[in-house]
Image 1: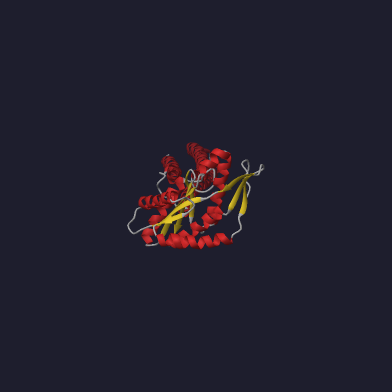
Image 2 (image 1 turned 90 degrees about the vertical axis):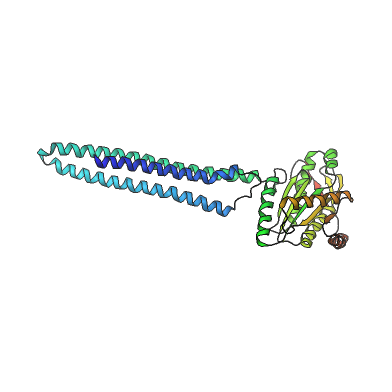
Length: 337
């Protein structure tokens, strides 16, 4: 009966190891759901590596259980063989009873290990499903529901991450804030559905006129943020001016009525991160430049370098003179590009 005690101990150890593996999986995925908004998002590659590690642990435990189930089956077969041999001897009554008892206990242990293996596999699948659901929820939590670009939470995380990276590598990074001019007037006159449509179209203009590594987010209301990793100030200003000109050149109408909204413009503030400057200080400077653009008459880009303001404005004004105004419709009930 001593071997039976060892089997029971093994069963408890394997059961504990299996649920430790499940616990590791839950601990690995839990921070993604409860992380503070200011914390930078973990790279998807790191998350995938952790998920694969947890999955490997659970699969290893399942294989161990399967190996022990096979061992018990082999042991049971050997006991059956010994029992058949003992059956040929009439004087082997007590020994035969002991062997039969061992066979029954071994079969019971095998069945219990089978149940544990099945439960562990189901737990592993639950962890995978939970991880998938959490990733989808996290992605949805970082996306603005109106414009389908990053929201304020996304901006906070990405901005902190990019500033930390720029400071660590000694690289440039620029930040811009954009504000649609007189957006409240559009909302009040044409309704919030038209206003939402305008926000979506402006977000599309932003995305289409930045580089692949740049990040665009809705900062709040009619304000948008653009992060330019590795960009010099004149490069960021050039991109923002291009956006301003594209937006200004369009004529907006309401369909199907054909009512004219008129010209829509935006104001911008742009700054480059200074040495030993905190992310909050950079954001404050950009916000001040945006306020100056509003005060000076809107529909302009203001930076820390007045010369950059003037030269970029002259350059983009020449581009605007060569551009034919385009007409863009605002359909309040459905998307239309």
